[in-house]
Image 1 (cartoon, rainbow, N blue to C red):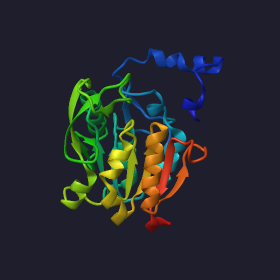
Image 2: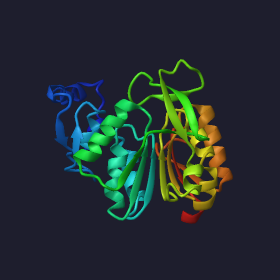
Image 3: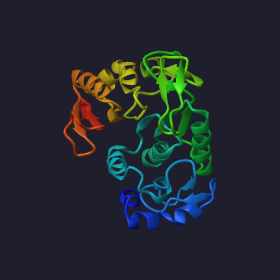
Image 4: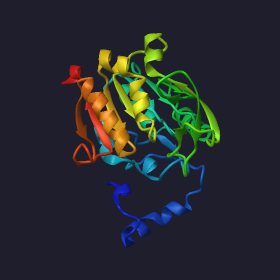
Length: 251
């Protein structure tokens, strides 16, 4: 059941959410449905939809269909680890997951979820992904899932930045089979910093864009790299925020 799809604006949604308020923050609970069923999740780390198994259900199903055993998956903007944990299950013991996240609060929960579920095929990178190696200011945003890089010093956090091309070319990371990118406006810089990797290896990309200008620039870059673009939210491409990009090797 898509619990997350029941709006909290109507009576049913409000009634269904009453028991959730009784769960103490920090409680360890089992995921109740989906590919992560039986895995453990920390209440309060993110939305209840994560342990209910209905978090971003459409994207989750598409992601699960795309990730294969033995894949190398890059999770850009891993947050507290829902997709990293999901990928760790889907790639199996022969696959690898590399999770990129710069925010200390999110990193603590990410590592806790991996440890809680005894995940051994996932590596955490304490960094934001961009066009180059260096440092940048990071605005934490109104909640833990909406932080983003900022060019100004008003950001309360200074973070390391990395470029995927550097990491893959140097051999620090293997070429990715699939990249999930949801980094609150930094998507174009991340893709630009991975353009050689995308051109050479054509990994599948699950992309969440933030803002019409960023969306257009990302789509133009991917089309130039001979990707085929479809949407994850049933909207026309120029109106969508969720994009599935299939590289030429998979077409």
